[in-house]
Each structure stands twice: as C-alpha cells, then as structure tokens.
Length: 249
Length: 340
Ligand SMILES: Nc1ncnc2c1ncn2[C@@H]1O[C@H](COP(=O)(O)OP(=O)(O)O)[C@@H](O)[C@H]1O
Ligand SMILES: [Mg+2]
Picture 1 (tube, protein in one colour):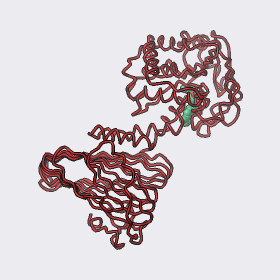
Picture 2 (cartoon, helix red, strand yellow; picture 1 turned 30 degrees about the vertical axis):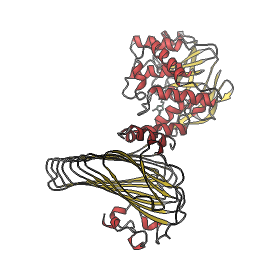
Picture 3 (tube, helix red, strand yellow; picture 1 turned 90 degrees about the horizontal axis):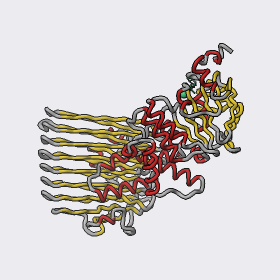
Picture 4 (tube, rainbow over the protein chains, first blue to last red; picture 1 turned 90 degrees about the vertical axis):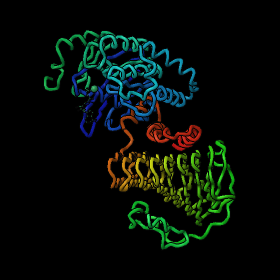
C-alpha cells in the first residue's frame, strides 16, 4: 500500500504541497483531480525523487518501505513508475536500447537475472503490437520527434515492459485522441492486479470513463480537500473546481 | 606555428607559455620549467589496441625506433604506428615519416601508449598523401594523468588526395595533438575529426591549422568532447583559404559538454578567407548534460552514473560513426565504451 502522510514539498523555496495525506491500498486505483497548478505533477515528481522538488516535511512509503530516503533509480527498482505528463526526449539512445538498459538495471538492483536480448525482443514485439505501435519507432532515439500521443504510448509501453507495482499516471490522456485513449486505457487496465496500486492524475473526468477508479480525491491548495467514489469525478466535471479553491474555502 | 616548430625537449627556452597565442590555453611552460632528463630504453610489451587488425608496425619505445621509422605505402595497407612511453620522470622525442604513394590506400592506426609516469613525450609524424592516395588515420591515446605529451602531425595532400583523421583523446596532465594540414594541390579532400573524454584534472588540446593553397579542396571537421571533474578540453581550429584557393568547401564544428561544476572547455575557431567562391562555415556549442533527461532515465531505474554514461556515449558516438573503416570503428567504439 502507498501511504502518504502530511507531505510538504517546496519548489524553488515556494511551498506547493502543504500537508498532503493519502493512502492507496494494494489492488486499488485512485484518481487525483484538481485545477491547473494545484500541485498534481509536483506530487508525482516528489514521490519519484526529481531534483528541485524538496520534501520539507511528512513521509511517503510503499509497502512499508520509506520512499523519500532513497535514490530515484532505487525507487524505480522498488516498483515505482511515473508516466510523465511531458515525456522527455533522449537524443542518441534508441528506445529499445533504453528500455532494456532500464529493465536490466532494475533486475540487477533486485538481485534478479537479467533478460537476454532475444527474450526481450519478443516481449517488446508483443507489447508494441497490443499498443498498436509501429515497431520501427522503437529503433529511433527515445521520444525524439515523437508526437504528444506517441510519447504517451511509449510511456505505457515502458510501463508494460518494466512491470512496476506502484503506477503514477500524470495526465496520460492529454494529447490522445479517442481511439488512442482507448488503446492506452486498455494497456493500463491490463496491468490492474491485486498487488498493484495506481494513482491516476488527471484534470478531466474523461480518462476515468476508461480507467475506472475505486476512489477519487480532489487536490487543491496543496492538500487533499475532498475524497469520494467515482461519482465525485462527475460532480467535478459538472460543477468545476471553484468550491474547492482556497479563496472559496 | 612558429613556436611549435621550434619545440625541442632538450632546450627549455623553446617551451611555450600561455603568452604564446597558439598555446594560451595549454601553458606548457607552467608544467615544464626545465628540460627533462633523457629517457632510457624501454620494453615494447603488450601488442596494443589495434593488434587484431593486423598489418605492419612501426614502433617507438621512449622515442627510440624499434626497427624502421619511415614507412611507404604503395598498395592497400595497414600500419600500426605505436608510440610507447614507459619512462618515469624523463623525456623523449620520436619522429616518424609516412608516405602514401599515388593511388595507395593506407589505414594508419596510431597509438600513444603510456605505461610509465610523469614522463614528457614529444611525438612527431609527417604524412605525405600523394595524388589520388587515401590515408585513414585513427589516433588513440591512453596516457597516465601525470604525463605531458605533445604530438604533432604535418600532413601534405597532393591532387585528389583523400585524408581522414580521427583523434580519440583521454588527456594527460597536459596533452596536445596538433595537426597542420596543407591542401597543396587541386581537389584534395580532408576530414579532421576528434573527440575527447576527460576526467580528473586531465587536459586535452586538439589544435589544427588547415591551409588551403589550391582550388577545389574540401575540409570537414567535427570535434566533440565531454569534460568531467576539473578536466579541461581545448579546441583551436584554424582554416586558412589562401588567394587562389577558389571553390574551397570548408566546414568546422565543435560541440562540447561540461558534465561537472568545475570542468572547462575553451574553443577558438578561426576562418581566414582570401579566395573567391568559397563555402565556409563553423559552428560551436558548449552545453551541459540535460538534467531532465538524467532524471527521466533514473525514474526508469537507470542509475545516475549509467544515465550519464549513456548520454555521454550518445553524444560522442557521432564522431566514431564517421570513421570509414569498419574494423577500426568497432575497436574505437569498444575502447570508448569501456572508458565511459
Ligand atoms: N520547476 C518548477 N519551477 C517553478 N515552479 C514550479 C515548477 N514546477 C511546478 N511549479 C509550480 O508549482 C505549482 C504546481 O505545479 P504542478 O505540480 O505542475 O501543478 P499541476 O500538475 O497540478 O498543474 C505551480 O504553481 C507551478 O507554477
Ligand atoms: Mg501537471
């Protein structure tokens, strides 16, 4: 289970998260919704250890182990995967080379055996097919010159191959048309399992028609200000975030 | 150029300081105040990194030729030119002369193999590329961090001569590779590439002076380098297009990455043009490793060190990919990968 308690995070000395508390039990999918600038991406970055996102107070643990105390790569090996809102371009490193390097680095860190090149190739082919991706794209430098939608699919492909246990999806729906959204959501839903926890960050309710959350939380003013069932997402869609904004509180 | 032509390890008065314009980033005098004691004899030892590519060998051990010191290629040949230094605290000078006869094709695999410490090496090579001959010269350096090493190459191209040079430098206390190349007759074609990968307090200087005195010559130059720790990379590239060297096409590019707070890269590109109808361009960039790319890679489980090595490799490999001989390219690729 993911346990976040009283998390405070500053960016460039400006407090963004101000006492965020949230639990996601194993096997559940929770959505975090909130207005632009609420700190949703900040939550994903601070859990994954991005430099510049300074945790000033509070704690976060995954299956009982402290997350905030270890290096970003160690968090990944412990099962954390962040699908970026804006995936980064890696010039000169072919996508397939990169994913295999990452997978084997994680396996080494966990004391598991590395995957061989032929076995990996098979896995990549299967995964790219089910995401309806052109296999040749995997030979190109990762994300370089990809469209927004292609980058998002590449994130989900990496997720499928790395098999993380704690999934954070940051605005995965942005940049996707409805067909692509369906394919990506199928990919995410295929990963649901009793051991996995998912945090689905989104600004719009649309994604949640495809990835059905167990719980929905509203992030505003740096904290979770409301929690409820899937119906809360529909309320937000109809009424907007106004009543949760700090000025209205 | 003048100061360098006079460099003589037995005479401290010839050691340039940074007050000599061509040496302003590589102050030899600062590291070498007095003439070093001459080095003794040396053993040749291991066969060197290019051994598997076969061919002939010209070997200098602590400056002394082990066998011949001149080489003439008249067919399709491979030569391993090895400068071996196993001296400790002493200095030596070597001079080799390489000729590619008209129509010859020579793969010249040059290594600067430092096994001693705190030595001073001064290695000189003259290369004549006759009409329609081709020379591919690869230079690999592997020298200790406390050595001083100055290598000079004087390259002369005749009509239609083709020359391909790639210097792969890992630096030393002070390491300098100077190339002076002359397009002496019409239609010669030169590529003068290099890369450097430096750590610790290492220093590498790649300096070139390309002189177009005849028409229709082509020069293409791509230098890329990465400095870490407190290392310092220097590139000085001068291209002269003399009066009458019309229709010259000369392009020079240097791209550096500083991968630490205290690393330094100094670049001085110069294009001096007196001819007509020439195409000349130069581009220079110096940047840092992309922090957001490093974080992204780490988020996927790649350690910080491996992420830096991957980005560094991706950056430098462009220079290796331009090596036209496949066997040599693969040796350099592996050699570089092992040092990331
Ligand atoms: N790298 C950064 N530098 C400065 N300010 C930042 C940075 N990242 C986020 N912020 C600020 O933090 C706040 C929250 O941003 P973010 O987490 O991206 O919000 P959301 O994802 O909910 O739209 C915003 O006010 C934004 O301007
Ligand atoms: Mg965001």
